[in-house]
Amino acid sequence: MENFTDQEKAILKPFFTNLDKPVFVLVNLPEVVKGALFSRYSRSPKSLRRVLLEEFIQNPEMNFKEIASMDEKTIFEKFVATKKAEEFYDRVLVGYGDDSVAELAGVHIACEDVSQLLAAKALEDNRIGISPLEKSTRYVWFDQKENGKYKYYRDPDIMESGFDNLYEESMDFLFDTYSELVPPLSEFIQSKNPKTEDVSERAYQATIRAKVCDILRQLLPSCTLTNVGLFGNGRAFEYMLNKMYVSPLAEVRQLATSIQEELDKVIPSFVKRAKTEHGKMMQEYLKNTEDAMWLFKIEGATSREDIELVDYDQDAEEKVISAILYPYSNLSMIELRKKVKEMTQDEKKKILNEYAGRRKVRQHKIGRAFENTFYTFDILAPLGAYKDLQRHRMLTQQRQLITTDYGFDIPKEILEAKLEVKYKKAMEQASLAFNKVREKMPIQAQYLVPLGFKVRWYFKLNLREVCHLTELRSSPQGHEYYRKIAQAIALKVREVHPLLAEHATKFVDFKDYSLERLEAEKKLDEKIKKLQEKYKK
Ligand SMILES: Cc1cc2nc3c(=O)[nH]c(=O)nc-3n(C[C@H](O)[C@H](O)[C@H](O)COP(=O)(O)OP(=O)(O)OC[C@H]3O[C@@H](n4cnc5c(N)ncnc54)[C@H](O)[C@@H]3O)c2cc1C
Image 1 (tube, rainbow, N blue to C red):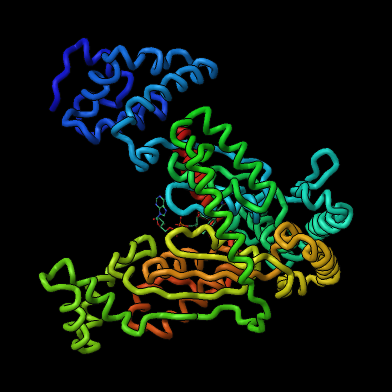
Image 2 (image 1 turned 90 degrees about the horizontal axis):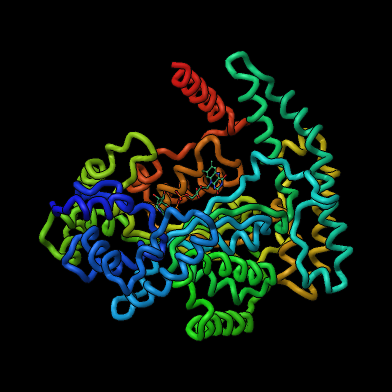
């Protein structure tokens, strides 16, 4: 272990969680300083604490005292400190920097009142380096007004196009219908699922509310406002900004400007390229490519299949089993594939059982060898299901434009409660308005489409992600729509690769639940009780 003098220890103490162990966390340092420190560390034989001490703190050029003067807690002082850190970061980076250094600083940023299907998805469509969390449509009623207005995004292009009245009328009508249907639907769901003795009043009410929200959210249009929190690193934010700056949607471009403004206050060095010539060139490249591709627009879809397995490997078993054996062999992959090809089904089964058969719960991840075979699924399903499933990142996915062309789903509870007339009227009116706006502006018209209308997208994913997605998304507390998709994906994989699917879809739940949240709420009751007892003691 590195030895520090008492004086050195006193200097270093505020910045590390310990000074005498090889594993420690950096604290009380601005993000840019942490990034700079790591970038220097990667090229130095010294320990991290020693680098901080000798090259940053004791180097007068670095102005470290000012930079890390964390006693000065005011925002202004922090801002000044960051500016200084910025200068110093630039200095450190000359000769040492590469793109991955910008991954070393993380920021939590909140984006409030953004449209749930367009702006929120622009934020969430970043797979590596950004972790989003969005306001749920399940625990919040969307019938509240602010200053007499429902909370949905009013796109400036639509509002200036002469469609403003049509837009507001049809969106208001959706929200009015949502509000109007809350009481009768809640009553119906309660009468269909009366409270039993083993369920607390809290758990019961929360479950009913979640169910009603789940059903009525089909009426919420894509422009409904939501809140998204992101934790991400500088490199990922920079790419996200580059993409957002060239969005055809004014909301997304404006959001990019606001995000840049805020990130500039805390990690300017890591995101500045989005504003420089370098960024402009990247943005031009992205925009010109997107524009060029629209010239190849092909239309005339006739398929109405919900889920189609477009392609899969004929030799999936060989690929996966060879990869299972690879680390325990000295054969090349091609040699191993030949060996596996000659195996009997029983031999293959035995290997798979040893490799994956010890999984006791879905959280026991299946091994990496299952990443060696891929499936493409084309999906036509309600926009709400897309909204939820889009959040998976370990796969490739792309969607088509959101339209009302494929019709909308009527939840069975709406039919059973005889509320379909109002529901259909609001959906049809939204569709009429959508079609008018689409003629002039197909991209912006997406804002008008409610979550109950179907959209087409594809997933290309490996079998390990199939395992994760289908087992997670079929769990009882999930939304009925995406549970069905998860179940269908699992069934199709079982059909083509039964030997592999036996393990990779082992914990897929095929049951139907009339109250999806009930068991989860009962468990929550138990947790609350345990916590209360713990703190009483
Ligand atoms: C019942 C239910 C309710 C939900 N409610 C909400 C909600 O209210 N709000 C909300 O925002 N989301 C909600 N979600 C979505 C959820 O938070 C996840 O975003 C979504 O399920 C994707 O799951 P994932 O990250 O495990 O999968 P993937 O993105 O497909 O990733 C697969 C696995 O890879 C690993 N991984 C991927 N990326 C990272 C990373 N950056 N860091 C570390 N590990 C990573 C993890 O092990 C992950 O499980 C809900 C999901 C469910 C099932």
